[in-house]
Image 1 (cartoon, helix red, strand yellow):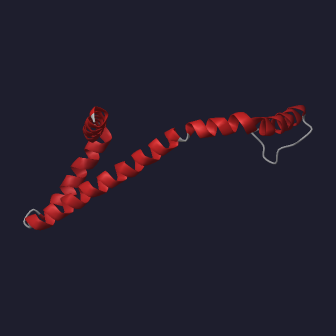
Image 2 (cartoon, rainbow, N blue to C red; image 1 turned 30 degrees about the vertical axis):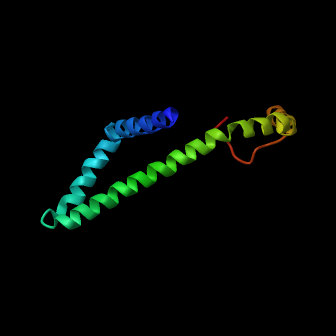
Length: 113
């Protein structure tokens, strides 16, 4: 249970730090100005603010999930590369050698030389 509390605390702290960093802070200020434009109708402002917060939560949750999924898949990718990379590196090195020797011409030029 302690590791779960640590994970929740870390997520809260990182979320807090993200919300006050310069780029999201400017975005949050602009969003609050946009949401608060109907200050006379408090229910509409409250509803728009809740939707804005929910959208930010959803966006950061999706980004975090993608990062975690990619980090957790790294061992599988590593095992696949260790067993199959030689199938790709050999022919690639032969092609690069042929290009460097001038036996193959690339269809695009890289300047005047």
